[in-house]
Amino acid sequence: MHFPTLSPGERPNDNHPPYKSTTLRGPRAERVIVRHDFAATSGVAVERSILSANDIDLTKHGASEPLGQAITVSGRVVDEDGKPVRDSLVEVWQCNAAGRYAHAKDDHDAPLDPNFFGFGKFLTDSDGRYRFKTIKPGAYPWGNHPNAWRPAHIHFSLFGNVYAQRLVTQMYFPDDPLFPFDPIFNGISDGAARNRLISRFSLDETVSGTSLGFVFDIVLRGRNATPSGV
Amino acid sequence: MSNVTSSQTIGPFFHEALKWGNAVGNGEIELQGRIVDGAGNPIDDAMIEVWANDVAGVAGFGLLRQPSDREGRFVFRLPKPNAGQPLAHVCVFARGCFNHHFTAVFTSGSDHPLLNATPAARRDTLIASANGASSFVWTIRMQGESETVFFEYQ
Image (cartoon, rainbow over all chains, first blue to last red; front, side, top):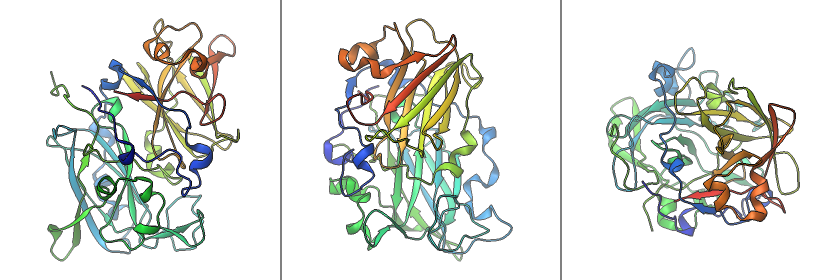
């Protein structure tokens, strides 16, 4: 298995002054390029026992239903050859409908929702597919620059099948008016790569009378994977 | 141009979501780590993942992870590595980091392809210093003269 070099525009620049926190935290030296077997070492072995029933339904973590627009997010995780990334761990987290995280460090003056905590986890299935239910997260202000607001997003952490496939990213929603102003979204200078982080609305995935459906397909790095089980 | 999904920062609000998987390990080697920014200030909201042999009761490589604390510190208890092998393969995430950063931590005297691929002048950034018989100290520096080496796996 190998991991073709990413073009500069599809990997965010580690030093991107509009996102101020990169100034002291983005490495300045070039990465040291290596070919090493460890990159293709099988990733985290996850026992299904860590997963509980409500890990894929973030609306079921409180005593009653959370406030906000109920949605499902679904998609398929594949590698660069389009092969499914099977049985791999995905973690998600997000703020509530008002734009507030259930997190001690979030000091945004928007209400917490006692019925929403905003985190879940699941494994992809044998075809790389996943699906979870949640509420649509709100936009929220942050201190990067005057009147800075993050577009609504859901954080994704993916382990893939091997070490070098690890990915942490953010999924966005279609037609967000905040896109042009967000230095994190725009840290990806290639427009096509940036747009791949935007989920699409799907009437097929929309559950009548219940929840809107959004689809977010994910491509992890890596080509010529060993078929699983070989 | 590939069709790969790009990375975005882990941000500052991951702790509650990821804490189910936090683990220090129970090996005989203690790794006392610290992560600092380009001004030498502690990074208090990083997440450090380490991969080492035979951790977490898993045969083969297993994952441990910890968020950094207020002083930028993190601790892992790792199994004794086989000769030449790293104490751990390490992956660093933090607010202000658009991408995760792969690195590794070794004890002095190790001979390993990752060290050999690293320019000699920068190898020290991957070596933890002994602090007693079974304890090692290592600092991850995101920038500066002794910026830690980060790897690009091909």
